[in-house]
Amino acid sequence: DTAVSQTPKYLVTQMGNDKSIKCEQNLGHDTMYWYKQDSKKFLKIMFSYNNKELIINETVPNRFSPKSPDKAHLNLHINSLELGDSAVYFCASSLDAGGSPLHFGNGTRLTVT
Amino acid sequence: GENVEQHPSTLSVQEGDSAVIKCTYSDSASNYFPWYKQELGKGPQLIIDIRSNVGEKKDQRIAVTLNKTAKHFSLHITETQPEDSAVYFCAARGHRGSYIPTFGRGTSLIVHP
Image (cartoon, rainbow over all chains, first blue to last red; front, side, top):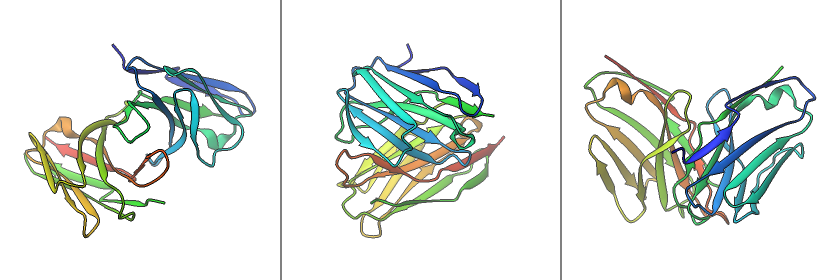
């Protein structure tokens, strides 16, 4: 019974390609997030959606486009991949946007060659 | 915005010893301080949290203390076990529109059997 599941777990691709990562939560939460974790383990917020509406959009390149078809899903599409996009991407959810605890997925390790 | 400093970056202890991880934050309006544990290949998991109206909270072998005046909070793990080995993140929730927590840079805890 995975609460926050993301696919794929590993993604290896070449520079210039376009790829997507999918995320689904079965917790009934209203708010979902994408975080990027770099090689030094630093966790950086990228986007947050509340009830399918974008509420946080940090200074992320336009090549990154989140999409939330419903409040249980938040997908991340990345265009024209660059070497610097290599990282682990975590999806997370929380009950609401008022600061309730985050529940993370197990991450997608993206390697751009 | 909020800034969270976390120390040490690496902590090595013998099984049975105690471990202490310290964090400081910059936004005096922050009122929620969660701690997350990230095991290898997994996403961060909430292990304990504390709110600003409380000075200390315990849950079995882990405890968190908060000093609002000094703007620092600490995680204490007693009687450490090898399965405590992981990366630990502190976070502080400042006053931003959607109450996204700001994470520290993580502490890699290694417990030697």
